[in-house]
Amino acid sequence: MASEKPRSVPSRLIEGPAESIPLEDAGVETVVSTWRLCRISDVSVALAEIRRLLKPDGQLLFVEHGLAPENSVQRDQQNPGDKSEETNRQRVVEREFARGEPFERNV
Image (cartoon, rainbow, N blue to C red; front, side, top):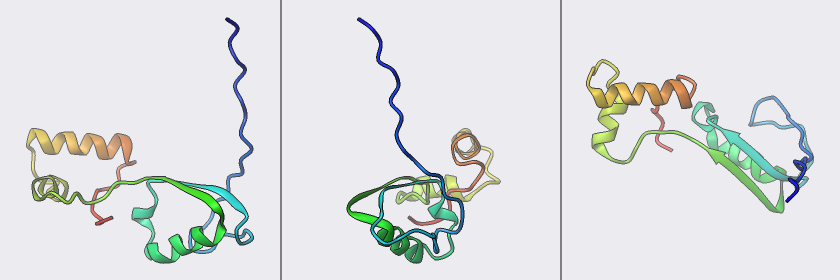
């Protein structure tokens, strides 16, 4: 069985503030956000901007980290001085998957 050629997907990277993206209304099929919403000061404004950009059947794809709802996990997230094994695992996750950004915002 012959292997298929990889398909390319038309895409365009736009860098800039999420609160003001220089594109037309309802002109975007997909918005991708990775570990950024936690660093935007006014998430409501950014999400409204994303909604403005998306076509009616468009989609927002995101991966995010934030403060866990469970108290026991929150203690690990909020206590960087704790040298326990669990907290050390948390620091590895922050370093490797969240680019060193702490899990502090309630998302």
